Length: 231
Image (cartoon, rainbow, N blue to C red; front, side, top):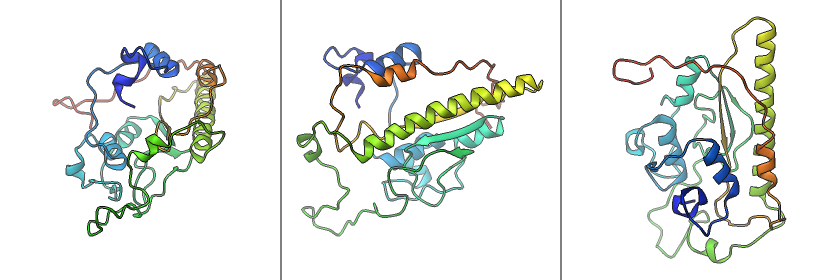
């Protein structure tokens, strides 16, 4: 979803109360850019801090090699508990890439089914090609695979936050140092097919976020090298 289509960035027509509230309570980046418009290479680039061309990920059919260090590897090295919940579109056998836990499956397969066939005529499109048809056929839906997946992602996220809070409560009782954690929650929406639920007049997602547990611990700063990089 483009920034110019979000209320948090000043759009008067957009109705995005949950994202707006997250922006108000969190951090808003005015100059954040994707290195590629495709899912898998963009996420691999985000995980590694390197351009897709540097790690050999050019499209949704490229293997994200397990030998590439990610921010999850670096935070685990710094003592963080790391967990991934939801979609990440990792292609290849490694479905963790440094995360200690992965609490859901992915909504897309991890195989090489999305390798493009450059020999096909332009009018012969593979099943996963994206075009404007998804926009013209968009509409409300009672239930979809994507909605079910996002529901599970939210449930797992809230449970994991409570699990980490309980773990640190136990550490305090035992006189041990609390463990900081990294949790990455990733939804499929907004993504084609554009089939949201019909509005019920309430924002249940917002009320869910307002019941998150309070976590009390000081997050240690990772050691930095003279160049300012986290080793």
